[in-house]
Image 1 (cartoon, rainbow, N blue to C red):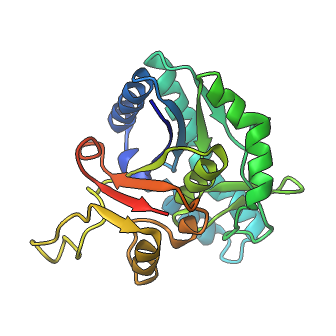
Image 2: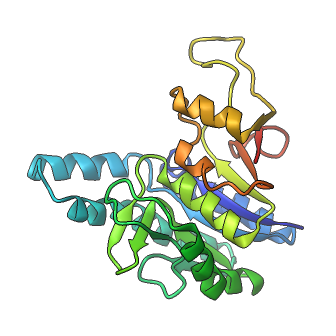
Length: 249
């Protein structure tokens, strides 16, 4: 038994069938006696479409309003995933910026906000941690934050990874599990190199350098919040049981 923060990327939340499959996987994790927090990205393609529509309608839209629009992707997917878990008998709780349990507080940098870790830690202890200890499964909007004065922010591309790592740090979770559409971090680009292999273990420093070099497997900002003893596992629903990449803090 363990405590896990599981982040589901948009690529694995493409439609109703994939949502149900991911919910079934989470149910299996819970049934093994684990405590689980779920962080969801927007459904596949939704954030891009919201951004395109906003830019067409107003190329110079205020960042504050863009944040509110872009946040709708995660706020919608969190509701859908909560429904999917409840249908499968999992006691899930929606946690979005309107929730009294909301944990992610950021600075005021709209469209590229950064979490205020110690403030997040306090919020987690006041709300989210209690839900977890009760055995409930919080479903948290990734990517989204609130400023100290209650304004919506977003954390840039890959922001849901950051949400998951921050929550794991604050909850002292055993692992962050990033569920993506790839088997892990590869030695080279598998689209260009048939000999590319999944790297089983990497340090956070090694992955940080890869992300700065253009790797999109995990957002570099997320690694800044990894606890020194923290662990991140990256893989797909098909590979996480037996393989994937383990990142050590």
